[in-house]
Image 1: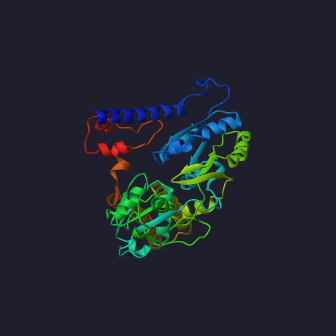
Image 2: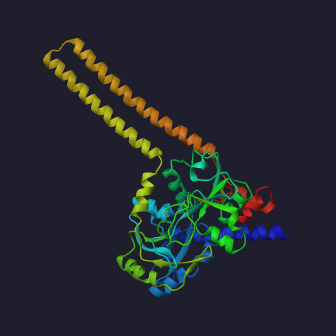
Image 3: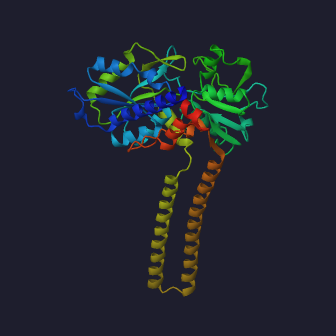
Length: 416
């Protein structure tokens, strides 16, 4: 019976979350206050997210005399909310902000920074292995089992991916296995220590917190590709990037934007996360990260569609050339032999264009097959999706049933 009540409580907590998410789609007229309600969509990354940010909305409401509401969203839901304009602000990690700001005119108002460090030195990842492992350097990771916290988490997989690609290691192809532990990040560290995986990428600061808490011994872990930066307090293997961004959507008035730019850095209450204290600082420069992400952005169907469009344009140009040649031949009364060689040349060029297009499409399909075969999502990450789409889909009834009646996936669902 206690398990049953815990399961029911868990389902009720999920339902309350969905009730909160419905506020995204309600018109402003349903709220009794005369002032517009400003909705802040925040990237949900850990189970204790709301408790980490619970003071921000009331503080902003008090300082600006305007009601604010924080709504936790996953990475897909944030992109959807921005596209539909159903939120006014977003708080998200530097990677997603850098990507979204390329397609939407997001305006950064503040950046989250570590206390007592430069605001630009906030986000990084640490790549680790066991101290007794034969993996000595980052290049030894090829054909090894690798783990990260989440595919979408910047301070884990995304930051590590940029560093790995810079060393000519493609995480989607060059590992023998790629798993995701889910939160908390300590799961990935313990998986390395317990030999469940050979190496892992975790947010910088995770090791230091686990050592302070007595969870691990410093001598059990080796940091790969360690970077030297005396201004940054944590072991890290990647570049150090600005922190999370607090950004406004274009429809927010300039007055509210300017007031938030002024108020956010003045907030006295630190935001505690993963054992560290953070504060809001003036917005940092995300362009270097945007350039790095563009540099290592893999080919997508959109890229291949663009290539196909270019090839189609090239074929059209060839057709125009062919017509021009035929006209010239007709006017100059050239021999049929010259016309034959001209047609053969143009046909060969067209065949080469078609072959190149098909080859690129085949390369993409092969890459996708290898990616699907290589990436293995951990149960805790894939069983209960949090993909709140336009219609608030994502919670599967089968998962709720498993929670209530039990099953092999029940423990993982409870943890989520």
